[in-house]
Amino acid sequence: MQTQGISRRAMLTGVGGVGTAVALGTFGRQAVAAEDGTAKFPLPDKTELNVLITGDAGTGTPEQFAVAAAARKLCERRGVDLAIGLGDNIYENGPEDVLDDEFTTKFEEPNKGIDVPWLMVLGNHDTSGIIPGSGGRPSRGDHEIAYHQHSARWYMPDRHYSVAVPQRAPVAEFFAIDTTPLSSYVLQTDPEYHWDGPFAHKQRAWLTDSLAASRAHWKFVFAHHPLRNNGTHGNAGAYEGITCGDYMSGKHVKKLYEEVVCGKAEFILSGHDHTLQILDTGADHHGTQQIVCGAAAKTKGKADQPENKEFWAAYDTLGFMMLSINADRVVTDAYTVDPETSDYQHAYRHTRTDRIGG
Image 1: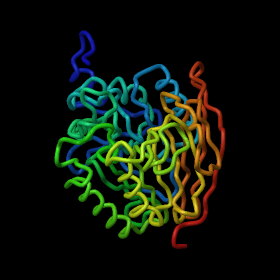
Image 2: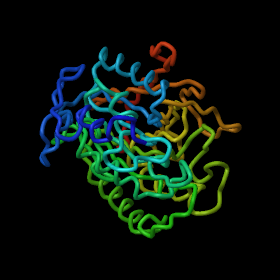
Image 3: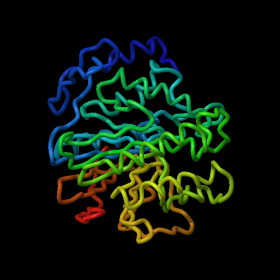
Protein backbone atom coordinates (compact mmCIF):
# COMPACT_ATOMS: atom_id res chain seq x y z
CA MET A 1 0.00 0.00 0.00
CA GLN A 2 2.97 2.32 0.09
CA THR A 3 3.00 5.23 -2.33
CA GLN A 4 6.09 5.15 -4.55
CA GLY A 5 8.80 7.49 -3.31
CA ILE A 6 6.87 8.59 -0.20
CA SER A 7 6.90 6.68 3.05
CA ARG A 8 3.74 6.08 5.03
CA ARG A 9 5.11 8.15 7.89
CA ALA A 10 5.97 11.03 5.55
CA MET A 11 2.50 10.92 4.03
CA LEU A 12 0.88 11.15 7.46
CA THR A 13 3.09 13.88 8.83
CA GLY A 14 2.34 15.94 5.74
CA VAL A 15 -1.36 16.03 6.63
CA GLY A 16 -1.42 16.86 10.30
CA GLY A 17 0.00 13.53 11.40
CA VAL A 18 2.75 12.59 13.81
CA GLY A 19 4.83 15.50 15.01
CA THR A 20 3.14 18.09 12.79
CA ALA A 21 1.49 21.29 13.89
CA VAL A 22 -2.01 21.59 12.43
CA ALA A 23 -2.74 24.87 10.66
CA LEU A 24 -5.99 26.77 10.48
CA GLY A 25 -8.50 25.11 8.16
CA THR A 26 -11.32 26.32 5.95
CA PHE A 27 -13.51 27.17 8.93
CA GLY A 28 -10.77 28.86 10.94
CA ARG A 29 -10.37 26.12 13.54
CA GLN A 30 -7.13 25.26 15.25
CA ALA A 31 -6.31 21.83 16.60
CA VAL A 32 -5.56 21.94 20.31
CA ALA A 33 -3.82 19.55 22.69
CA ALA A 34 -6.16 17.04 24.27
CA GLU A 35 -5.62 15.62 27.78
CA ASP A 36 -3.37 12.90 26.35
CA GLY A 37 -1.29 15.47 24.45
CA THR A 38 -2.75 14.61 21.04
CA ALA A 39 -3.49 17.56 18.75
CA LYS A 40 -7.23 17.30 18.03
CA PHE A 41 -9.94 19.54 16.71
CA PRO A 42 -12.00 20.17 19.86
CA LEU A 43 -15.45 18.78 20.47
CA PRO A 44 -18.11 21.49 20.29
CA ASP A 45 -19.48 23.13 23.42
CA LYS A 46 -22.82 24.44 22.20
CA THR A 47 -26.50 23.57 22.19
CA GLU A 48 -27.19 23.90 18.47
CA LEU A 49 -25.24 21.56 16.22
CA ASN A 50 -24.70 20.78 12.56
CA VAL A 51 -23.44 17.23 12.11
CA LEU A 52 -22.21 15.93 8.75
CA ILE A 53 -23.02 12.24 8.08
CA THR A 54 -21.11 10.10 5.57
CA GLY A 55 -20.58 6.38 5.21
CA ASP A 56 -18.65 3.80 3.21
CA ALA A 57 -16.36 6.55 2.00
CA GLY A 58 -12.85 5.12 2.10
CA THR A 59 -12.14 4.23 -1.52
CA GLY A 60 -9.70 6.96 -2.49
CA THR A 61 -11.55 7.19 -5.82
CA PRO A 62 -12.72 10.32 -7.66
CA GLU A 63 -16.24 9.57 -6.41
CA GLN A 64 -15.10 9.86 -2.79
CA PHE A 65 -13.29 13.12 -3.51
CA ALA A 66 -16.37 14.49 -5.31
CA VAL A 67 -18.70 13.76 -2.38
CA ALA A 68 -16.19 15.18 0.10
CA ALA A 69 -15.79 18.33 -2.01
CA ALA A 70 -19.56 18.77 -2.16
CA ALA A 71 -19.84 18.26 1.60
CA ARG A 72 -17.07 20.80 2.14
CA LYS A 73 -19.01 23.38 0.09
CA LEU A 74 -22.12 22.79 2.17
CA CYS A 75 -20.18 22.95 5.43
CA GLU A 76 -18.65 26.27 4.37
CA ARG A 77 -22.13 27.61 3.67
CA ARG A 78 -24.03 26.20 6.65
CA GLY A 79 -21.27 25.61 9.21
CA VAL A 80 -20.42 22.26 10.77
CA ASP A 81 -19.58 21.17 14.31
CA LEU A 82 -19.06 17.40 14.04
CA ALA A 83 -18.83 14.73 11.35
CA ILE A 84 -19.70 11.05 11.60
CA GLY A 85 -18.12 8.32 9.48
CA LEU A 86 -20.24 5.17 9.41
CA GLY A 87 -17.55 2.58 8.67
CA ASP A 88 -15.75 1.07 5.71
CA ASN A 89 -13.26 3.84 6.21
CA ILE A 90 -10.34 2.08 4.46
CA TYR A 91 -11.28 -0.20 1.57
CA GLU A 92 -10.76 -3.08 0.82
CA ASN A 93 -9.33 -4.76 3.94
CA GLY A 94 -8.48 -1.98 6.35
CA PRO A 95 -5.05 -0.48 7.14
CA GLU A 96 -1.94 -2.61 7.57
CA ASP A 97 -0.65 -0.48 10.45
CA VAL A 98 -1.21 2.86 12.13
CA LEU A 99 1.11 4.60 9.67
CA ASP A 100 -0.48 3.15 6.54
CA ASP A 101 -0.58 5.80 3.82
CA GLU A 102 -4.21 4.89 3.15
CA PHE A 103 -5.20 6.98 6.17
CA THR A 104 -3.92 9.92 4.16
CA THR A 105 -5.22 9.04 0.70
CA LYS A 106 -8.63 7.75 1.87
CA PHE A 107 -9.39 10.04 4.81
CA GLU A 108 -7.16 13.07 5.38
CA GLU A 109 -6.80 14.27 1.80
CA PRO A 110 -10.47 13.94 0.76
CA ASN A 111 -11.72 15.61 3.96
CA LYS A 112 -9.14 18.37 4.14
CA GLY A 113 -10.83 21.59 5.21
CA ILE A 114 -13.67 19.91 7.11
CA ASP A 115 -11.78 20.58 10.29
CA VAL A 116 -13.97 19.14 13.03
CA PRO A 117 -13.88 15.91 15.02
CA TRP A 118 -14.90 12.97 12.83
CA LEU A 119 -16.58 10.35 15.02
CA MET A 120 -15.66 7.06 13.36
CA VAL A 121 -16.78 3.42 13.65
CA LEU A 122 -15.41 0.22 12.15
CA GLY A 123 -16.98 -1.53 9.16
CA ASN A 124 -16.51 -4.98 7.68
CA HIS A 125 -13.99 -3.69 5.14
CA ASP A 126 -11.92 -2.16 7.95
CA THR A 127 -11.44 -5.51 9.67
CA SER A 128 -10.83 -8.05 6.92
CA GLY A 129 -8.07 -10.49 6.04
CA ILE A 130 -7.62 -12.58 2.93
CA ILE A 131 -11.25 -12.14 1.85
CA PRO A 132 -12.06 -8.45 1.19
CA GLY A 133 -14.97 -7.24 3.29
CA SER A 134 -15.27 -10.45 5.28
CA GLY A 135 -14.91 -8.77 8.66
CA GLY A 136 -13.00 -11.83 9.77
CA ARG A 137 -10.00 -10.06 11.29
CA PRO A 138 -11.34 -7.72 13.98
CA SER A 139 -7.86 -7.12 15.40
CA ARG A 140 -7.09 -5.11 12.27
CA GLY A 141 -9.40 -2.47 13.67
CA ASP A 142 -6.78 -1.79 16.35
CA HIS A 143 -4.85 0.25 13.74
CA GLU A 144 -7.82 2.59 13.27
CA ILE A 145 -8.22 2.98 17.03
CA ALA A 146 -4.50 3.76 17.35
CA TYR A 147 -4.82 6.35 14.56
CA HIS A 148 -6.90 8.41 16.99
CA GLN A 149 -3.52 9.45 18.44
CA HIS A 150 -2.16 10.57 15.05
CA SER A 151 -4.88 12.73 13.51
CA ALA A 152 -6.55 16.00 14.40
CA ARG A 153 -9.80 14.91 12.70
CA TRP A 154 -10.08 11.15 13.28
CA TYR A 155 -11.95 10.40 16.54
CA MET A 156 -12.05 6.71 17.50
CA PRO A 157 -10.70 6.19 21.01
CA ASP A 158 -12.10 2.65 21.16
CA ARG A 159 -14.38 0.21 19.37
CA HIS A 160 -17.29 1.60 21.36
CA TYR A 161 -17.46 5.03 22.94
CA SER A 162 -19.83 7.94 23.48
CA VAL A 163 -19.64 11.70 22.93
CA ALA A 164 -22.06 14.07 24.67
CA VAL A 165 -22.46 17.64 23.39
CA PRO A 166 -22.26 19.91 25.26
CA GLN A 167 -20.72 17.78 27.95
CA ARG A 168 -22.30 19.37 31.02
CA ALA A 169 -25.91 19.50 29.80
CA PRO A 170 -25.98 17.54 26.54
CA VAL A 171 -28.48 18.28 23.83
CA ALA A 172 -27.22 15.20 21.99
CA GLU A 173 -25.21 12.12 22.79
CA PHE A 174 -23.65 9.85 20.16
CA PHE A 175 -22.96 6.19 20.97
CA ALA A 176 -20.54 4.39 18.66
CA ILE A 177 -20.55 0.57 18.49
CA ASP A 178 -18.78 -2.11 16.46
CA THR A 179 -21.29 -4.45 14.80
CA THR A 180 -18.88 -6.30 12.50
CA PRO A 181 -17.95 -9.14 14.91
CA LEU A 182 -21.67 -9.93 15.09
CA SER A 183 -22.25 -9.95 11.33
CA SER A 184 -19.07 -11.01 9.56
CA TYR A 185 -19.18 -13.06 6.37
CA VAL A 186 -16.92 -15.70 7.95
CA LEU A 187 -16.76 -17.36 11.35
CA GLN A 188 -14.79 -15.47 13.96
CA THR A 189 -11.74 -17.53 14.94
CA ASP A 190 -10.50 -15.16 17.66
CA PRO A 191 -12.41 -16.09 20.85
CA GLU A 192 -12.42 -12.43 21.92
CA TYR A 193 -14.68 -11.53 18.98
CA HIS A 194 -16.91 -14.61 18.89
CA TRP A 195 -20.57 -13.59 18.61
CA ASP A 196 -21.01 -14.66 22.25
CA GLY A 197 -17.47 -13.77 23.35
CA PRO A 198 -16.01 -11.22 25.77
CA PHE A 199 -16.17 -8.26 23.39
CA ALA A 200 -19.85 -8.78 22.55
CA HIS A 201 -20.78 -9.03 26.23
CA LYS A 202 -18.69 -6.02 27.22
CA GLN A 203 -20.10 -3.85 24.43
CA ARG A 204 -23.70 -4.82 25.17
CA ALA A 205 -23.30 -4.08 28.89
CA TRP A 206 -21.60 -0.77 28.14
CA LEU A 207 -24.31 0.31 25.68
CA THR A 208 -27.13 -0.70 28.04
CA ASP A 209 -25.65 1.23 30.95
CA SER A 210 -24.62 4.24 28.85
CA LEU A 211 -28.04 4.73 27.27
CA ALA A 212 -29.71 4.42 30.67
CA ALA A 213 -27.35 6.98 32.18
CA SER A 214 -27.53 9.52 29.35
CA ARG A 215 -29.09 12.90 30.16
CA ALA A 216 -29.16 14.03 26.51
CA HIS A 217 -32.31 15.33 24.82
CA TRP A 218 -31.50 13.22 21.75
CA LYS A 219 -29.63 9.92 21.60
CA PHE A 220 -27.96 8.60 18.44
CA VAL A 221 -26.52 5.09 18.21
CA PHE A 222 -24.26 4.77 15.19
CA ALA A 223 -22.66 1.70 13.68
CA HIS A 224 -21.81 0.30 10.28
CA HIS A 225 -24.64 -2.23 10.03
CA PRO A 226 -28.31 -1.16 10.00
CA LEU A 227 -31.25 -2.68 11.81
CA ARG A 228 -33.68 -1.86 9.00
CA ASN A 229 -32.65 -1.34 5.43
CA ASN A 230 -34.34 -1.34 2.02
CA GLY A 231 -31.05 -1.74 0.18
CA THR A 232 -29.69 -4.98 -1.20
CA HIS A 233 -28.02 -6.14 2.04
CA GLY A 234 -31.45 -6.30 3.70
CA ASN A 235 -32.53 -6.12 7.32
CA ALA A 236 -30.54 -7.35 10.30
CA GLY A 237 -31.44 -10.98 10.93
CA ALA A 238 -31.78 -11.59 7.21
CA TYR A 239 -28.71 -9.92 5.69
CA GLU A 240 -28.09 -11.15 2.15
CA GLY A 241 -31.37 -13.11 2.45
CA ILE A 242 -29.78 -15.47 5.00
CA THR A 243 -31.69 -16.18 8.21
CA CYS A 244 -29.62 -18.98 9.77
CA GLY A 245 -26.21 -19.03 11.40
CA ASP A 246 -24.65 -16.72 13.95
CA TYR A 247 -22.75 -14.35 11.66
CA MET A 248 -23.75 -13.59 8.08
CA SER A 249 -27.46 -13.22 8.86
CA GLY A 250 -26.76 -10.48 11.39
CA LYS A 251 -29.27 -12.00 13.79
CA HIS A 252 -27.18 -10.93 16.77
CA VAL A 253 -27.02 -7.37 15.43
CA LYS A 254 -30.81 -7.45 15.28
CA LYS A 255 -30.98 -8.74 18.84
CA LEU A 256 -28.62 -6.03 20.12
CA TYR A 257 -30.57 -3.26 18.45
CA GLU A 258 -34.02 -4.52 19.38
CA GLU A 259 -33.20 -5.41 23.00
CA VAL A 260 -30.86 -2.56 23.91
CA VAL A 261 -31.39 0.36 21.52
CA CYS A 262 -35.02 0.41 20.40
CA GLY A 263 -37.08 2.56 22.71
CA LYS A 264 -33.91 3.95 24.30
CA ALA A 265 -32.37 6.03 21.47
CA GLU A 266 -34.23 8.16 18.95
CA PHE A 267 -31.93 7.31 16.03
CA ILE A 268 -29.82 4.50 14.60
CA LEU A 269 -27.34 5.81 12.03
CA SER A 270 -25.74 3.22 9.74
CA GLY A 271 -23.97 2.67 6.45
CA HIS A 272 -23.15 -0.71 4.84
CA ASP A 273 -25.66 -0.33 2.03
CA HIS A 274 -24.45 2.29 -0.45
CA THR A 275 -27.72 4.18 -0.39
CA LEU A 276 -29.44 7.13 1.29
CA GLN A 277 -32.51 6.25 3.35
CA ILE A 278 -34.60 8.08 5.94
CA LEU A 279 -36.97 5.42 7.25
CA ASP A 280 -39.97 5.95 9.52
CA THR A 281 -39.79 5.36 13.25
CA GLY A 282 -41.59 2.05 12.93
CA ALA A 283 -44.30 1.11 15.40
CA ASP A 284 -42.45 -2.11 16.26
CA HIS A 285 -39.29 -0.19 17.16
CA HIS A 286 -40.66 2.01 19.96
CA GLY A 287 -39.80 5.35 18.41
CA THR A 288 -36.29 4.49 17.21
CA GLN A 289 -35.76 5.76 13.67
CA GLN A 290 -33.31 4.23 11.17
CA ILE A 291 -31.17 6.36 8.87
CA VAL A 292 -28.88 4.71 6.30
CA CYS A 293 -26.17 6.90 4.78
CA GLY A 294 -23.57 4.86 2.92
CA ALA A 295 -23.30 6.56 -0.47
CA ALA A 296 -20.16 8.64 0.04
CA ALA A 297 -18.20 6.79 -2.67
CA LYS A 298 -20.38 4.05 -4.18
CA THR A 299 -23.99 3.28 -5.06
CA LYS A 300 -25.74 -0.04 -4.60
CA GLY A 301 -29.42 -0.15 -5.55
CA LYS A 302 -32.67 -1.21 -3.93
CA ALA A 303 -33.82 -4.57 -2.59
CA ASP A 304 -36.17 -6.50 -4.85
CA GLN A 305 -38.78 -6.58 -2.10
CA PRO A 306 -38.13 -3.77 0.39
CA GLU A 307 -39.88 -4.27 3.72
CA ASN A 308 -39.60 -0.94 5.52
CA LYS A 309 -41.65 2.23 5.30
CA GLU A 310 -39.57 5.22 4.32
CA PHE A 311 -39.98 8.96 4.37
CA TRP A 312 -37.46 9.30 1.54
CA ALA A 313 -34.69 7.31 -0.12
CA ALA A 314 -32.25 7.40 -3.04
CA TYR A 315 -30.65 4.15 -4.17
CA ASP A 316 -28.57 5.00 -7.21
CA THR A 317 -26.90 8.30 -6.42
CA LEU A 318 -23.95 9.46 -4.37
CA GLY A 319 -24.61 11.71 -1.41
CA PHE A 320 -24.46 12.55 2.28
CA MET A 321 -26.64 14.01 5.03
CA MET A 322 -26.56 16.81 7.59
CA LEU A 323 -28.26 16.75 10.99
CA SER A 324 -29.25 20.05 12.58
CA ILE A 325 -29.88 19.47 16.27
CA ASN A 326 -31.18 21.56 19.15
CA ALA A 327 -33.17 20.77 22.27
CA ASP A 328 -36.49 20.93 20.42
CA ARG A 329 -35.88 19.14 17.15
CA VAL A 330 -33.61 17.16 14.84
CA VAL A 331 -33.67 18.12 11.18
CA THR A 332 -32.23 15.63 8.71
CA ASP A 333 -31.26 17.07 5.32
CA ALA A 334 -30.29 14.67 2.53
CA TYR A 335 -28.07 15.83 -0.33
CA THR A 336 -27.26 14.11 -3.60
CA VAL A 337 -23.97 14.73 -5.40
CA ASP A 338 -23.02 14.99 -9.06
CA PRO A 339 -19.67 13.16 -9.32
CA GLU A 340 -18.70 15.09 -12.45
CA THR A 341 -19.04 18.56 -10.93
CA SER A 342 -18.80 17.88 -7.16
CA ASP A 343 -21.99 19.89 -6.75
CA TYR A 344 -24.63 18.98 -4.18
CA GLN A 345 -28.38 19.24 -4.48
CA HIS A 346 -30.78 19.32 -1.56
CA ALA A 347 -33.06 16.30 -1.96
CA TYR A 348 -35.18 16.00 1.19
CA ARG A 349 -35.75 17.44 4.66
CA HIS A 350 -37.24 15.57 7.60
CA THR A 351 -37.96 17.20 10.97
CA ARG A 352 -38.46 15.27 14.18
CA THR A 353 -39.73 16.89 17.38
CA ASP A 354 -40.95 13.89 19.40
CA ARG A 355 -38.50 12.34 21.85
CA ILE A 356 -38.69 8.90 23.40
CA GLY A 357 -40.09 9.21 26.90
CA GLY A 358 -41.35 12.73 26.29
